[in-house]
Length: 349
Ligand code: IPM
Ligand code: MG
Image (cartoon, rainbow, N blue to C red; front, side, top):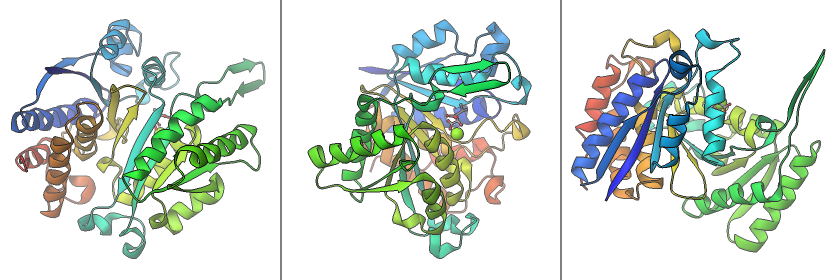
């Protein structure tokens, strides 16, 4: 059986990191005897330029029948202020594929501790998995603009909270068995529903997973003062957007981190969490590790190949340990050279 992978290179450094990640995926599929088919499609600003739609109908149709989708990056100053924005394509893709859970792992490689803005003793034990709700809340509530007034509705249902919380609790079982649910229950009604629902789910289905609730403002502070005290972080869409960027700097470079957006089936969307970085686009200097980590997540969550995923994680670890670095980490390797170094370290066991 062959898996269909849709590749959306997108904008800025997206195409470069997508090429780098796909070269590692192809090499890994050879080592692990996986059969993969690749199909590239227009998306984001590139698709606005080509056909005035950030999420063309053909792209959406191809994603719907794929086993996994890889996205490079979307957006850039070129489309700022335009009526059609590349980001709308990303929101449309998440909603259209019903990818309600966004997983963003943050850890700190021992060889890169010095690149973190925090003191080494604070980051050495960081291993956080952020589980962000991705298709609800302020991002998708009714928007209104009338004269000098504007509003965005924040709406959540129990159903939406339960399905993403379940993913967080299940993930915690394979980790340190701890979930921190982050909300603003002292002010927001949606947060009160969130807290009640998560508490009830834990009691009913996950009594052995420890649950702690935190308010988002104090959590934003504690994620910096004691990041090692978190395991799985569960939160709603906007808080998750903000806190995941905050946490990304702990690792030393935003270029290192990958992500998975999942729904109720096997189909997932995988993308590095760095943006399109237009200032360095086209120079082959972007860090491909976030994109390559996303491919490892794809193998794990969509392609049923956990050993191949582990082989990629090990190869990244070994490359970084041996001083293979792009310029964001003080190195001189190009994006494609870094990918080659990782690819040459993929072994079957
Ligand atoms: C992210 C990004 C997106 C978001 C943007 C590009 C719409 O910031 O994936 O975190 O806000 O979700
Ligand atoms: Mg974001």
